[in-house]
Image (cartoon, rainbow, N blue to C red; front, side, top):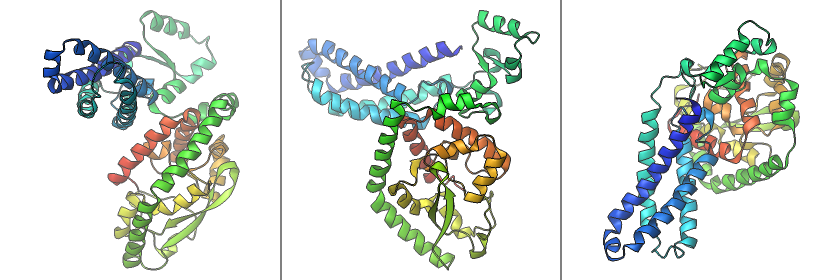
Length: 403
């Protein structure tokens, strides 16, 4: 179906799931109250209508209705959205239950949250069974969209260009330039298509919103790092003992990485490779032979990155951002990839959009593709995007998806 209709159907479906969940759980819990006081039915109806609107608003802020997410069920964003909506609903109920003259439905909120989550899961899964072209998440089927290559946009007088636009518009099909399509539906920006004007407009321009986001991001980095520092220290102690037992030698190693403003800084990591493996800078390969078997789980769970929490506290890194490259590798890539320096306008992160979407870059071509993900993040960074990246990173850690 066209994107606008799909947007509306998903929005209404989500709202129906939330409202039905509150109504059904309330009916089971307060049937006797409704029998004795029929007017309570209308009061509950109004309250649940307010809560449903609140939930849909939170889902919107979490990105569940962004174009690139319309065609797929995103478990991580839904978890973030439901968790946030639950907390805001609890706060809301504390203040407004008296207005509706009903007992505060604490248990109802708890049970309805789980029920609505299950219903939305099955609802979104049922409407997203259409195969996606080229593996693109959320991309409309090829017969429901028109994608125009950049070379045609550069020369709009090309034969058939205007006829293609006219035909698509009259048939109600969405029309995308190839670069817009890739950015919206694949979550990355085509590196070959960017210009200085685009960078100035989307990334480099200073706004009040960006300044506020920077302050909020630093508060998030500092507070979360302090909150999890004690359990991280316990995990780090266990990893250090593991390294001593199975690898021997030094527990840590350090590297110079490229940070914000092209300033080099030192990071510490747990050593998971043999002593002679770090003499020259090189990227990690799949099933890298330099990593002994007992160390692979440390890499896959990213526990070797734990010492970098110190860099986060010092402000040299953020929890979320482009992953910092080794200085020689960063200099080399900057000479090969246009505008590669742009990724150094933001603080590097422990995890990032590129990290969760494609992982490590083993070749120069991989690095170029990963830079496209970095550009997408830099152009769209927000508090909610950072939260969703952290949630997906946690999932990757639990399922050991690192290298």
